[in-house]
Image 1 (tube, rainbow, N blue to C red):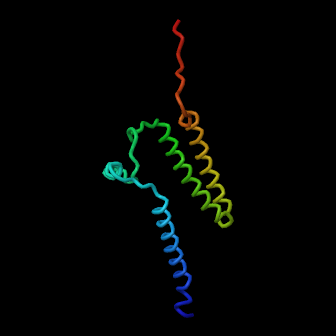
Image 2: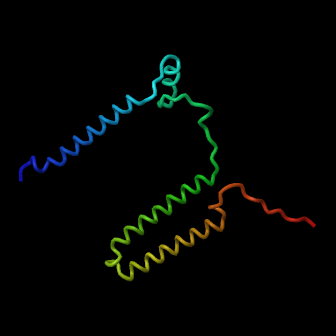
Image 3: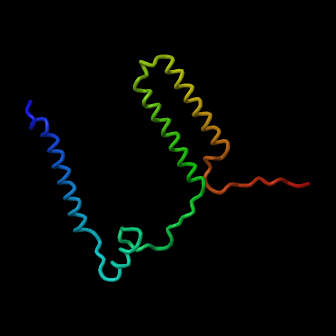
Length: 134
């Protein structure tokens, strides 16, 4: 087989990528916002290089639940990766693999029940339970 025939698809791909990048850069330069004068100087000296003048502070106070939900998503997403990889070899794994996945899913259900019961999935302000003093 000739070397050109082997490299032909790769060269076409590289050319297509170069054309796509050129078109995107040309469109960005034609349609982009233009800042002139003092606005250009002020925006280019800021830490954010987008050229947009910031309004207000960049420091946001996010509630802890936001981070908890993010961590839970990552954990359960990683579990989904293991389940998808198991699904590709389900016949070769047999009943022993099936039992291992059922045990794995059992742990996930227990973890989810614990999170639900402990209020880790609640969003918003929590109501305090008050005791009546006699």
